[in-house]
Image (tube, rainbow, N blue to C red; front, side):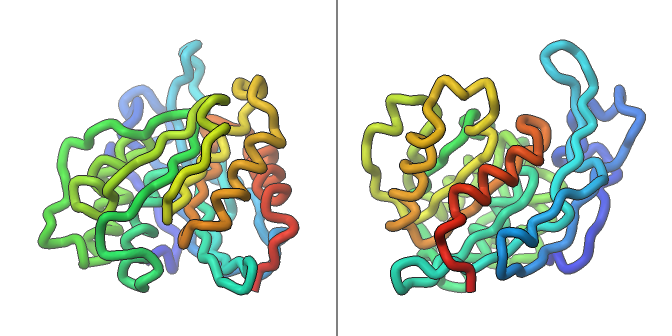
Length: 242
């Protein structure tokens, strides 16, 4: 899965947002690329998310050139990371990590750092009979889930036990026990600049030390992608990629 790029051309998944009002009727999903340097992360030029903002302006957001897989060597332990554009893709990579035994079969604890809760309930929940079928998980991720509703089904399927929401300044003052770190780079959007940048960065790195798995969304609709990449590179610049 994610070996080749494709388009979502029907009103499904993220493409269902304002589908009838859009002139562009398809969204691009790039292929996955393994990298060994943060400098290999590049911007793409195809629309990966499109919707109207709060001022009723249509935002046609371009994202990353690829999705990126990387292995960080951190204090003598390899930590797997996936960087992608829209946050619903985390759902697929969590189940991939389960299959690869990076995380446990169930009862994982998710540390969710995001400007949004992403806790909406999708219309359909994937059948528990399909939770080990990566092809069905891939289809569900891309054609049924969207950026706001991918966490709830992971909990319903018992992959996630607890969700710790980090969405404000006060929540950064505590330490949490979690084994999956789920970061949305829109936490660094200008609207959240009232939270000190270094405080956010230090919180992420402090918890990165203890988790087993990292998923990161660049969130094209909610943050400028050049800024998102710069933030990601800055946070992890001192950690070796192997």
